[in-house]
Image (cartoon, rainbow over the protein chains, first blue to last red):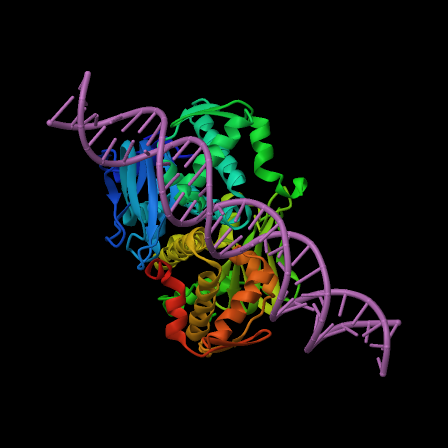
Length: 226
Length: 226
DNA sequence: TATCCATTTTGATTCAGATCAATCAAAGCG
DNA sequence: CGCTTTGATTGATCTGAATCAAAATGGATA
């Protein structure tokens, strides 16, 4: 329970109540679906371990990775609006999630104000995150996007107690490209460029950040350079 | 009260309770700020009339329009996560909003389940909307983006009882460009192109859609054309 | 180990949109 | 009523990323 994203600031009894709601755990193999676009929404999913991507797909076949998700994050928020999942959630490595029946969560959040409050903050944070991606897609160049992406991963690994300068990517260049609004070749070139400048070292999926400061520079200095 | 976005499916007594919470109305002149990035978050704002834009701005000065908002929509959802507004909200025409103290909304939503449910749907819908914009920014060409934008406006005007084929834009080409991840010249050219094809008629801010069906085609056929 | 398939890298070329620049129209103002 | 400012359109040119193509690498499997 403790490792869930939700119980922040709850007391023992409240955690107990929440624990009764978070009934089942589910394992998803690498490549497996946690949920599919168009299916009925029942539950949110809290990631206990692993790594997943979410993909939106339009009627016209257009498809895009809308996010990469790791331990402690909550999936399914988009489905609340229509009770239908609006994206696929696919495991990029073997993963484990807790299923949280949404109706029950709403019910108990009525009696635990801090839970409700926290849940609202999580939804709001997702909106803020999306605005950040919109900014990235709308105004950054390829290299800036990749730098931003790597720094984002770096920070999230750090928070979870892993190295912020050395990690393995779980996704392909194509998936990164889809997320960043770039073609996979462009992603590859951007990696090579950053490596040539000794800012990072790339060995296929393994990333070593040599110079965090300069990587941060890469992200936000387009206006300064010009 | 009735025209607010929140009271969907509430009974008389519940509407009464909500009405007590939605205390003050506020008028904002064209060009005025409803709220600013970095200021303390207290309240959500329900738009009663008018038209506003929200702008995210990064530390590095980068700025982007994250949305255009009209009657019945709810502003401020992004600020719940940190209790600080993460964007500017600026009126593009004289507007009127209802202030909804968020703490009170959370409180009464505990006693009115349908209100809580509805509020969650509104937040979730915002997430879905943002994913749509991400898709647009990540995978559409200029002309497709503009078509998508016009159709979105068209639908929203229709819902509010206005013409879906004839309306006045409240924002400049530059603001449209910022929202769509394009430069203003590109927006202007895309307008001209659609006009040359007799799909729309443009007279400065006045838009007449001559062929809704073909405009929809424009939006989603990049894969078919190729 | 050899084979196959997916993934990644790199190069050459093309193209959509950015940038630079000029013109024009409408609105605000002394 | 000119004058200035702001916004919009259009043209010419440049550039970053897409596209097309080929080779290299890696992992999975027989």
